[in-house]
Image (tube, rainbow, N blue to C red; front, top):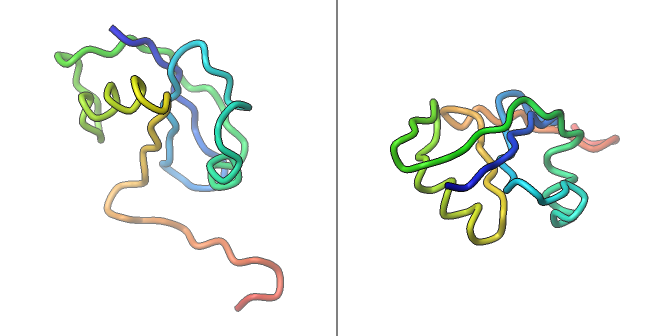
Length: 89
């Protein structure tokens, strides 16, 4: 059963990053780190196909942890907050 660490992302409400246990956030691709902002650990969990997760398919998370090592949970219902750069309107 894969173990993972779940982080809250500072740049978007209700966005969470599941990271395979043993991987450091600093090893993630730079564009992902820019998108997530500061990561705050919220829990450590063991995943199995029998475990239910509130907003994501546990099998999809397990698959992503086995591959690239992370899964980014987006906010529900596409409620993404647009962040404009300085000077944009």
